[in-house]
Amino acid sequence: MRITIENLRWAAAGRDIVRGVDLEIGSGETVGLLGPNGSGKSSLLRCVAGMRTPSAGAVRYEGQDIRGWSARRIARHTAFVAQAAETESDLRLGDVVSLGRTPFRDRWRGPSRTDHAVVEAALARLGLTHLRDRDWKTLSGGERQRAHIARALAQQPRCILLDEPTNHLDVRHRFELMDLLAGTDQTVLVALHDLSLAARYCDRLVLMERGAPVASGTPRDVLTPERLRDVFGIDAETGRDGRGNLTVTCYGSAPLHPVAGSA
Ligand SMILES: Nc1ncnc2c1ncn2[C@@H]1O[C@H](COP(=O)(O)OP(=O)(O)OP(=O)(O)O)[C@@H](O)[C@H]1O
Image 1 (cartoon, rainbow, N blue to C red):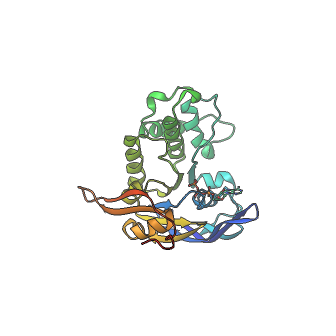
Image 2: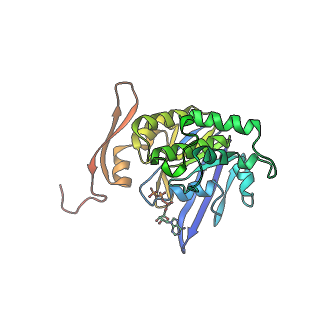
Image 3: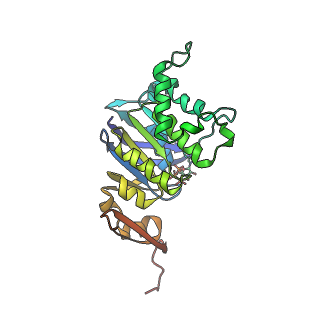
């Protein structure tokens, strides 16, 4: 599904937080959203997920402005995986993943055979089948994060929006998740802090600063040492690993602005 973001603005507490974002995401593309803490990545994702009403501009799914769409209608197109989603604690993991079928369910009927099959496939895809009956409150942070991603898959969306989906995952599960996202034919917009994962798996990167993109393009074009210094305040260099993947090596923090009198 093609997503168009047109001159999007969102304000809260009397302050512009998303400040004029223009972005087109092609069907099936995997786009990474980068930027320092507080640069507006989550706010932008929430606008695209229809959870925030823009103060100006528009979000379009296949050219249609989603302003005024019901949550159910949006959920039939797009799934959103929050950074730290709260979930009812008296549920089992399988119940949480089944919530992904809600937008498709008849209110008066139980889950269909298709619902069961889709939920089982999502559990298997995230390696969670053996934890289906576990109480939610007994799960680890990474297991919960994978369950939220399985719930998004169970929604069978045409677009998946994810906010820092790797932050609780161990190294193997990080790679598995990024393989899954990069390999799907669904449109993916994912906020990431791990620059090397973003470089390796995203077709395109959008670098945010103070609510607006400052760069957009291929990982190689966006992740230059100069830009990483300017935007993140880090001393970093890019290179290639032994298999030809773009890598970002961070050596530490760097002054955000040159110190007067320094060499
Ligand atoms: N509802 C709100 N009311 C007031 N300020 C808000 C609200 N939501 C977000 N903000 C502020 O907007 C800015 C951007 O927040 P946002 O969560 O979008 O950033 P982010 O890039 O996702 O950050 P992080 O990397 O830390 O998750 C922050 O300064 C945040 O405090």
